[in-house]
Image 1 (cartoon, rainbow, N blue to C red):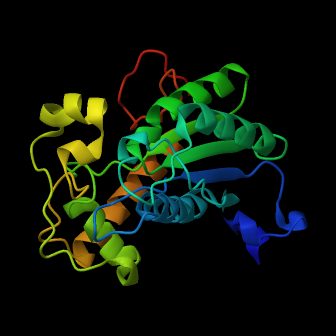
Image 2 (tube, rainbow, N blue to C red; image 1 turned 180 degrees about the horizontal axis):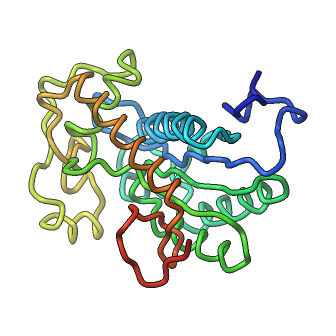
Length: 251
């Protein structure tokens, strides 16, 4: 039964939701991920990380933890040069986050947004910072694998080979922009991803595998669960690894 320890919020009936559960909300995007990955890549990964983190937290705390339906649209204007991308921009995403958490706060004890798309970070920081000033118990955590490449390269391709292999197209001939992100950032900001990489890939998917993907996803989920369990956040609500000092953090 969903109410025993939580699970997918969308599959629960209201009497199964006990008082003040923890709710994780995946935040993704609908944007191009090269010619070989689906537009839903960020959402699929955020959902998977949230589900695995929730499972770990239930085991550790024996508390009720739900995973809400993912927010599938984000701030993806840098990918607007590719057909299929749907971006709602920072202002709309900010409003969606604020109203989602205000609604959750009527019955949830704590909310954590699990973010799968780097372009969402400005809106997340602003919205969660505002919500915390309003007194809501909310924070956010990114799906940030250490050493991962930027977009649709080895990291995300491996993750999708593990999570949704049927959605991954052949990538042996896919080429991307492999210069460091810092080197291409000015042009990327000014002209978008397509001006930097015609394929839409920032990185190189060569060598991607489902086994690497399993390690990446499990590492991200463990990190998110650790940060949620630690409960320490910076001034804009971003959860910190335990032991990492930050000005403006709060327990």
